[in-house]
Length: 118
Image (tube, rainbow, N blue to C red; front, side, top):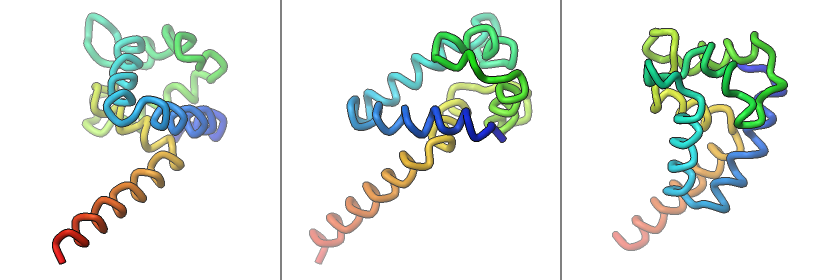
């Protein structure tokens, strides 16, 4: 699991991006972030590529242990690296404020649908 310091950076950053860019814009930016961090030969984010490129996203102060923890936490298929989907899911998981907002948006959408139904 990533350290509290690394989580705080994402908690502060992703909700601001979501509010500023909207859903599609946020996904585009996450894809751009993935492309900046990935190993271009392997097409995935490895610990080495994350360490090498982390300063591009302002993560240069994270320890090797924090970076390795991020890869391990997000690696759902167990291949030791993050594909694009795993990276995006990890970014959302590291941002509880954004996840809370998405639950509210879903609830509001469902209430709107139900209101139209009845």
